[in-house]
Amino acid sequence: MAASAAVILLAAAVSVSAGPVPDRLDRFRALASDRLSAAQVLDGDAATEAYREAYALLDEEVVESLGSGSVFASVGFLQERLDAFGDAWGGAAVRVTRLGRFTVGVFQLGERAMANSVRVYGKLGDDAALLTTLVQDGRPALFPLPPAAGGAVQFLIAWEGTASGRGSRPVRLDVARQQGDGVRVVWSTADAYPEGLVARTYTVRGADLRIRYELPYAGRVPGCEGQTEQEDVYRLAAGASVYTRVSQRQFDAWHRDLRASASRFFAALAAGDRRTVLTFVPDAKVREKLPARLDAEPVCDAAGGAKGEQVAVAASDAHGAPWTVTFQREGVRWRVTTAAPVIP
Image (cartoon, rainbow, N blue to C red; front, side, top):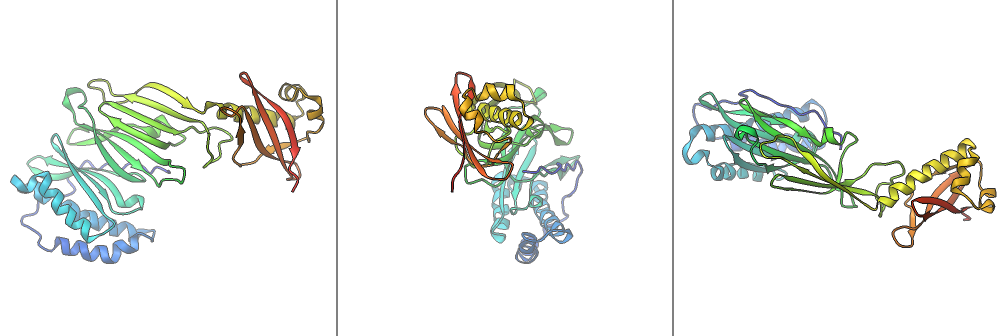
């Protein structure tokens, strides 16, 4: 999932209206049926402007209710009002949460990155206002967190991409913390996992964050079973605003080790490094049959035996002809036991 830069607007983008706007929902309904529908498939300024106008109407609705106070400022009333907007645009989902002095809205208006946001409302001086807008690729979900030092409000946002057929999805997890009149992101998996995070599962329980994800390494083929995954557990210490990793474990670690060994073997073969090839292929008869070059192919490995003790790896020679190279695990090392061209 390519992550776009977070947009943080620490300003009163909306102020309380002098009176109710009776046709706001009608205007949103008209916008939804016309321009928001087109924005789902179009790029450029027209789509951006359609979402901007939709959010302007939603922000006005929330800010007016908060400014009115009493029952109109309650989460229940706000949710009911915003549900009406969601019904007007079938692709919309909105959830409102009260966190300390803030009212936080999680808005999903479609599949496009620009369509989704987390918006923080509260008091700016004596007026209700939109304080902060956070935007990333993916659909957002909100998880309240224990307060930071001094009781500062903080929460975690999960930005989820589209799920793959293998049950994993790109995800970005951000911790947003109260700062001044709004919030800002103080920790992100974008920094902890600069190569990107494709998670099979993640859970947020109190101060603990658990992530099981696809571990990136050379030779990994998307969609194949039995490849190495890792689970990291992070914890927020009392009063802290950033996660610290407290444990880590791997699943099917043998596959990453196999692929590292296969990469070294193929590189040694191409370089004519006979000494290294000998360490991988002790059987002279097998070595004699090896071509001068083999390159791994992006095909699922065929594992046999307990925990992948024997694995067939697809490769091709310098002429593009397919080969199968079989690796056998011997203790902590992998040896090549057979290598042969695939006969159609």
